[in-house]
Length: 86
Image (cartoon, rainbow, N blue to C red; front, side):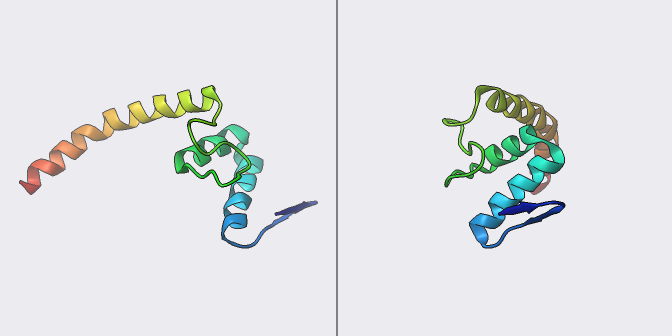
């Protein structure tokens, strides 16, 4: 990946994913890029930690809290849909 003036370029699959994280960090901030990478568990040698065992504790905590909120909100929808299938 190359960042030159107002242009950011990259190529290839892994380089493209790394490029996406770098772009996300530039546009949305490093913390957001860390969170997305950790959610993907992308860890070949990424710009940020891609696995809970190597991620910083604050990023893991934020994602766990966000996941609890998400799952508590989605559970009633899942139950409703499951009842229609049976």
